[in-house]
Amino acid sequence: MQIPLVSLKTQYAQIKDEILATIHRVLDSGDFILGEELRLFEKEWAQACQVSYAIGAASGTAALHMALLACGIGPGDEVVTVPFTFIATTEAISYTGATIRFVDIDPETYTLDATELKRVISNHTKAIVPVHLYGHPADMDPIISVAKEYGLKVIEDAAQAHLARYRGRIVGTISDVGCFSFFPVKNLGAYGDAGMVITNTPEIAEKVLLLRNHGRSEKYEHRMEGYNYRLDTLQAAILRVKLRHLEVWTEARRNHAAQYAEQLMGTPSIILPVEKPWARHVYHLYVVRSDRRLELQQALRQAGIETGIHYPLPLHLQPAYQRSGYPRGTFPHAEQLAAECLSLPMFPELTEKDLKTVTATIVRFSKN
Ligand SMILES: *Cc1c(COP(=O)(O)O)cnc(C)c1O
Image (tube, rainbow, N blue to C red; front, side, top):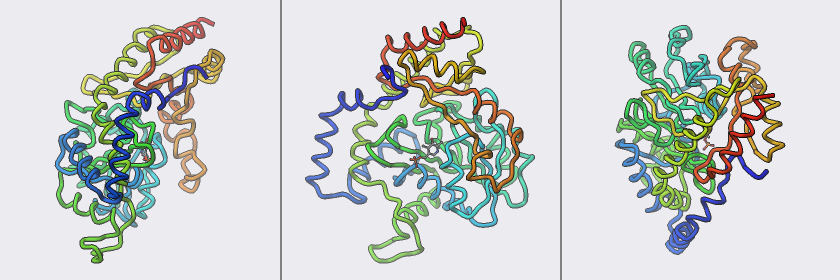
């Protein structure tokens, strides 16, 4: 493929010197577990998100698991989320022993539809997990208002939405607790696995600090059983270097999205992503919809353009959740998006020329 869906190589070439210097510094220091670079990255990420506490985690999945546990979620509880997300969201719920309850997505933003919440809330419901899918924030105010009414915790899955904003506020800080992934292709990506929990609530921060390091308060005093869910120092050091570029990279993504929108506007049978007036979309993915998705994907492939499908099957129809017994048709918006979504190339270093090749191919296709 001449034009990849995402490429990490150009970016690495641009920051190689900084990265290698940092790696050498950490290796020389011998400070690999809960080291100084992690402390600094946590401080800098808290500053970037304008939040009181940031606690590094081994992955986004680990971050979600700990956030749920720190909110007191466990066996017998029900947690509401969307069927249209990466499976890590629901795996984390299951890890706690709680039961997953799905509500459909909003057909415009592809995030949790708050008007559906009251239908699934029961006496056992303890929390809601909205997902800021593709980098567009979920509409948080109505979610928070339902949560307040029923005394529920809200845990934001912001794994795809670094520095996205909801009504001016950084996502992940709008509810009880926010979770990030720094998986390599995320908007801020490590060179391996990494994640983060952020919160303004000291009790949640304290619990996550214990959970991620074997429940340890002193070296060999364990207040509880925890996990080995630490973010390693080397990845934290790499993330510190990349964080310095994140705002510029985010603006580059937003510029690409504006170009896509301008060049594809009015193209028949292509539905473009929306950015609500209250949102800052950070375009982790640029996802269009087409009712001829496979043909369109084929046409792009023939032109040397790689695309992706995020995601081809909503979670309620996955084999892993067959036991839940949701028939096809239960969540029509999620099912329609799964059938029509196509992710176009999107990464900060995508060139204007490549972007034009993509849009020209789509425009040509739509005329047939
Ligand atoms: C990537 C992702 C996760 C999981 O993050 P990992 O770091 O891969 O564990 C969770 N939720 C969503 C929506 C994601 O995209």
